[in-house]
Amino acid sequence: MPGSELYQKLAEAFHAEGTRSMFGLLGDGNMYWAAALESLGCRPIYARHEHCAVSMAIAYANATGEPGIASVTCGPGLTQIMTALTTAARAEIPLVVFAGEAPSSSRWYNQAADQAPYVTACGGKYVRAHYPPRMLDQVQEAFLMARLERKPVVIGVPLDLQAQTAPPMANYTPSTAVIPRVGPIMPAPQDVVACAEEIRRSERIVLLAGRGAYRSGAAQECRQLADKIGAVLATTLPVRGLFHDHPFSLGVAGGFSTDVAREVFAKADLVIAVGASVSQHTSDNGKLYPKARVVQIDIRPVGVHQGRSVADFYVRADAKAGLAAVMQTLGAYSSPGRLRTPELADQIVRRPADASSFEIEPGVLDPRDVVRALDQALPKDWHIVNSSGHCSYFTTHMVGRRANRFHAIREFGAIGNGLSYAIGVAAAYPDHPVVLLDGDGGLLMHAQELETVRRHNLPILLCILNDGAYGSEIHKLRADGLSDSGAVFGRGNLGSIAHGFGLAGDVVRDLSKLPQLVAAFAAQPSGTLLDFHISDRVTSPVIRRAHPGKH
Ligand SMILES: Cc1ncc(C[n+]2csc(CCOP(=O)(O)OP(=O)(O)O)c2C)c(N)n1
Ligand SMILES: [Mg+2]
Image 1: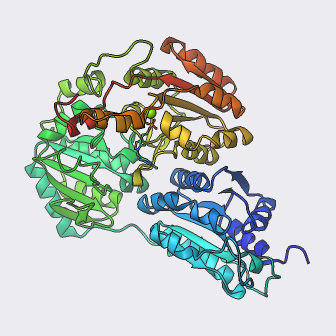
Image 2 (image 1 turned 30 degrees about the vertical axis):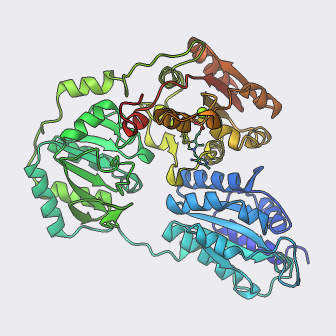
Image 3 (image 1 turned 90 degrees about the horizontal axis):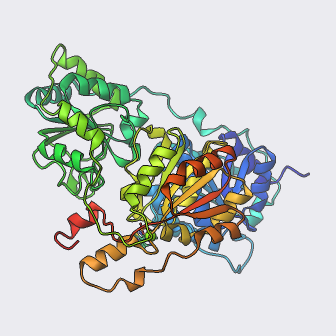
């Protein structure tokens, strides 16, 4: 009887979990399941490379807070996704990947592989679904692990078993129905008292908020506490924009901080890290705030993170609950602090992120001018996706945009994901324009996904900072006096490449035309590539600090 196969039941279970978007690439191991899922009303986005499908699911999960769903066939379909799985594991992104496995009844199968070790090597979990009566429980277990442990989980089902008639099974219970509903983690009173005492003793406080503050909905409490104790505000890169309209917001903390932010951090005597793991990047390898004591308010303090001691003392608590308790304990205490001056407010608005000057070769643009012009021309409520590479320093410095409009997933540091992340965000917010800021190298690593943009008619504006090179590499090689020839490729013709895939695209030589170009895209948003030829001589402060005196 059609509809009684196991793949159908498995698709129904995914649908019952709330799966309404799925990113995949088909093969014998997953196509029946995927077709069944689509017929239930799930929107599939079919990518041209499995790595990209999983990267799309990562961005979708990051944007929606729901598990990202992807699917690959057995063997080579699975081995393609190792970089994306590792990224998801490092970034604590919940994913469930439906993978085929080689038929269990065959003695030999060309695409057979022991799939679990590939996944576990990446930091993911592998669920072997080999016994039909258990399979629906295993789907639930996969979703539970993804949601509760914030991990990528791959469920592997042999393709011959998928085609069997399903045995009698109880109705599927979605993982959300069994997840314990519990309140936020409250702080221990003695930790709150210690934190309040530290605040009273300090005069130059920076409140640094991370993803935990964002997820707990604590932005308002962060502002309230900062205003009460005269602290200035900063965020980690992933939640940049959390305090975008506050006059004493320093922007991003870490290697990507502005000059003004670095100067303020250098004076800080206390950093209150709220829901921030305080990564090497965020603390700029411990160099950002050398004089400050650090308190971390977090649901899972770990003491040492990425090889560095995180804080001097800890408050284990949900961000919102922890901040409320600290404010209550401070009672009537308030202080203007010594950082909040009219001069600082003025500098935050007026000073560029990096004021260094460079001699720029003729016919190309300064990447800082490009980003400034884009920041002015792009509506503030459009989604912005930042990727990796040298240019990501420049693209970080866009202002006046909310945290939920910025998308940056930098864990594991792989280039080549920007376009996939933009597609994932576009799937999460149908009909909202999405802007991708990426380098030429990152784009060309997975340019095949331009075809996915066209096929799904996604409203993505690709703004490519094209230095004709792997900028990160050339700046470092040059600083060390080595040949940069292995990292210089020429700027090519990215507009023609876009046309070849059925998108619009052109070089932008005159930044004064940008408002018109953006207006044309806004009038009819569909895949468009703007190719900005930028200088390869403008070196970010991150590289200059790593190679002092050589730029
Ligand atoms: C998968 C992967 N391969 C190689 C690298 C090393 N890498 C870091 S940045 C970079 C250059 C990226 O070039 P592009 O996207 O043009 O950005 P740019 O640095 O030029 O601004 C490379 C190759 C990496 N991070 N990830
Ligand atoms: Mg480049």
